Length: 281
Ligand code: 13P
Image (cartoon, rainbow, N blue to C red):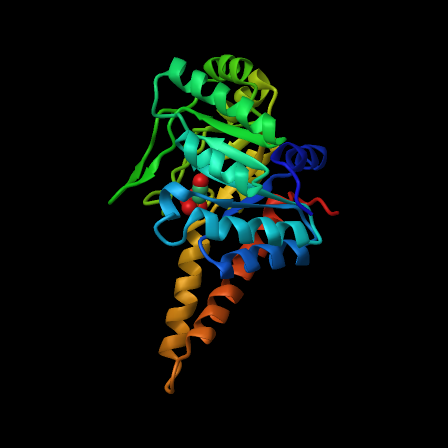
């Protein structure tokens, strides 16, 4: 069943949990997300970051499959564009039937970010879709250490949400995209303040590499959507390496795909269980 981000976050709010938002880059990834969510009987978000992964598969190709598989799923699934940074890409995703889009204007001055986000909100509303936007800058993977971005200011966040009418706010409080090079130190109090000042769900980016205990604390502070990709991709790569090393005969591409998928299903189920925060459906 295909549902919007707003609706899936309402479920998360009522259960004091976070919904997993897994980035997909292949058919195997989509199949793994849906299978994991169905086995855990838990709503899930399928998302595609065209800006980062469009080089592996076109938005139009993977997008159609994401929408079709979400529609046929036994659990509620939101199909979301991650880190949309231009209006054309966002409109293409909405035309494909995505039920949610992210507009990422975090690199822009505040007023420009507000103006562009407000426009995307009106566009998404025309399609009956939801919108996530970002304020503050997300960190990035460095060579030797985590590169932290500018943390989100709770008062600026309140103004931003009031001016833009978004459904969820991607906030910066110590996470980084990619592999952590040092132990992440998250600012839990900041999450609480952002949740309180804005009144809307907080989104965590850079979920890979956060400890189970920190995930639970973030959820208790108001995180309702957790973006997660890198470690699922890495573990799947590790599984293929292991399979190749332990196989002496021919290796067929379909066996590699099965190995990738089985690994991703396990990673996704583990993550979904933690994000459920002890809730059941
Ligand atoms: P990771 O790849 O670090 O898990 O982050 C995913 C993400 O935040 C996508 O927006």
